[in-house]
Length: 289
Image (tube, rainbow, N blue to C red; front, side, top):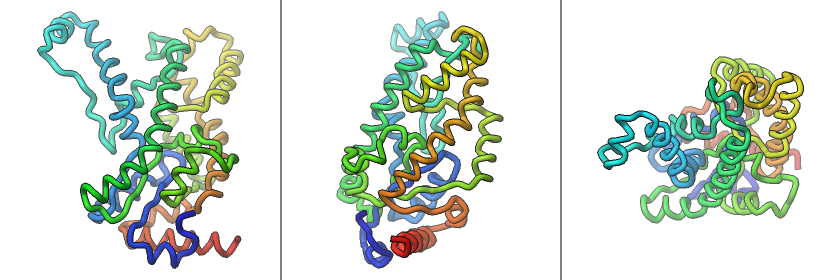
């Protein structure tokens, strides 16, 4: 770890942190609070994925749908209109829409082969965006003069690394530049995340082996061919399993850094509160070493 003790952290004039954990537990809340402080650069991995690495895929998908409408087709073919995504830190819907969900096309589903292709694109994009943090750490300071750096990682970070491997290239690079901080949720948080997801299922990235396993199991349970599966029903079926699949992977990643709870994070209102929280987490780790 780049900070071994709370004294190391508190005395560091250029603080650099990566937050990881399930979406909905406070990563972006804290990142926004730090950005508002004025001297923290906020690097969103999902935003980087959706703009730098998958922006063209997303825009082409919009254009493909627009080409089905005669009026829009004519305008596109004559370069009379411009179609792009308006992705922001707080609105990643264009990325989610492109990633999609498998199942019945009449209900918004994708053929499973196409779904797998987009999953693979996301995996490559996420790894690339994580490796870009080093460039943005330097850029944030050299170009804009930011003192500190916060990396707001996607919930699927644990699916693209092998935390049990001390030579994992992504984790080695990240931990060399930043302190990795796991935002750990409780059983109550898990239940709330499931309730939210049930109300509005969203596309998600899965580790390939895990995806094949839950998809095949679901097809067998439903007794239907892939093109007849209700996409949202599958996502709801998979979500709790995703949470359980990711928990031990997050815990293993935490060995590369420190752990804070979602309850602690919810109380952070400013940079001073965040700095104090990380200091306490480092003290806890040192006490249990």
